Image 1 (cartoon, rainbow, N blue to C red):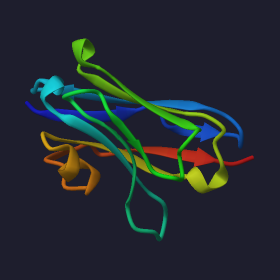
Image 2 (image 1 turned 180 degrees about the vertical axis):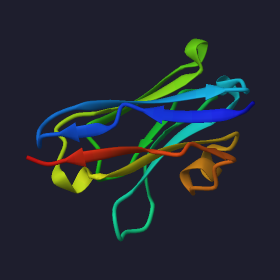
Image 3 (image 1 turned 90 degrees about the vertical axis):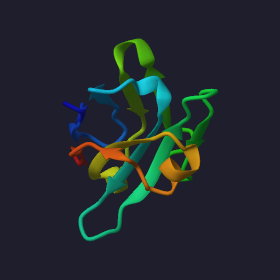
Image 4 (image 1 turned 30 degrees about the vertical axis):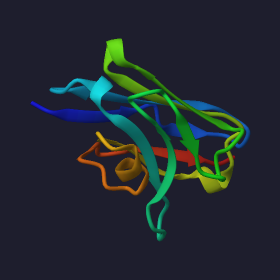
Length: 123
């Protein structure tokens, strides 16, 4: 059964760190670009980062540049998003998605989506 499961969210103080995981089952992750998106309460979903399957090239939205690092471990069928120096405005549900096309992933047209993990940044 094909499944994407995000984990690693939680409550963290401003300036803290979290590492989100996106575990895939029922498919071979190395065929797909991994994208991370987030949706804050009352706001539209926005792209955060992506990492391609072909050459591992990465993309970061301005909101996360210098603070977030995306990675993947194809052997474990898992993608990661390391988030440092977290800010209250990073509070959102974070989703991972997969698509064979990097462009489609970045556009939010993921073929597969997880159910999300909540990140709350608050003192």
